[in-house]
Image (cartoon, rainbow, N blue to C red; front, side, top):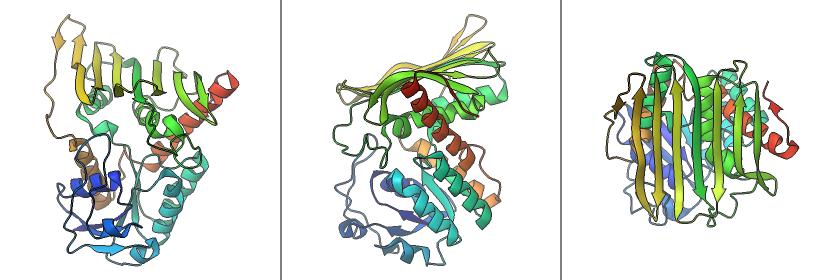
Length: 348
């Protein structure tokens, strides 16, 4: 049984806690949190933009700590699951790796590529795995697209257009702070940056146009420039004053023998599937693949199954690896550079 200690009992810490219960071969053995009432099981103040809200939790049999060092000193803990604000990801991961623990860290891996590199190097020195919670490829529509691209079912990838936009998160005071959260690119667009890096490889450069809010990009449109000029990939992301549409994400993915379509929004707090996953093949057929339905946490459960598989087998995940997560942060940094300079930014 793989024993996990979760650092940070906020919304994502709660989601991970609930999802571990649905994964065989793993147990949450410890929690580390500064708020004493949460360590006592009162999670009623926890809520997010999807999934369940917090409630009273039975934490019997689970060790609780106010200080990270105390949890790291517990020899029974094999994996530290970091669900803390992004600014803390690097120092906490370095401490956990130095203590001989595997690390599963929520995205983004860090606020800066240099810190991500420190984390990757520390994992190699410790002989432990560093896995990063880029859950997007585990959601059904994106999993289908990933498998279709990597498996070559519809031929070579020709290009893609991705979209991920939120309403202005007025309730998050640090959202636009480059030293705490990092703004829409690192909180939101990093999902699509990771997916692009996963299925396309690393672009040679990015060309971005957008608006700044202070030192971070508020909204951006980017063309990802690859050495293969026939690979045409773009993305749109950011925050808008559109409070009636709190979230939307979509893709069009162009393959030699098919186009994959998907478009989802949250309008007036209600989920709306504008375009269910659809395959337009080169024979004129329109297909709607059958996907798993219902549980909004299923993607996180599948992500955690991959974490357990990776650590148990010693075979690093091709999706959740630290290097891939670092490259996603680098792509966000380069897009900011391009917006500020008005010129393409090299990624190599």
